[in-house]
Length: 81
Image (cartoon, rainbow, N blue to C red; front, side, top):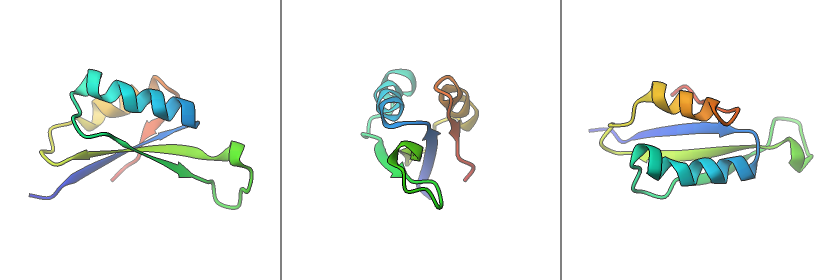
């Protein structure tokens, strides 16, 4: 069984932190999601960085469409695998 990893792309750190906190409430995610700063290519300004919320889903039980809709509520999206 392959581990599934979902990556939500969000506009800023505060939003990413909020989404990470909501994941356990909304989706029952038990493992703490990982927050990763993703500087846009060629951009040095920290304000232009997107933030990624990486969710491990070893049982492959999370619905990608639901995660994408959830990220969209925060002006983000689910990165295609």
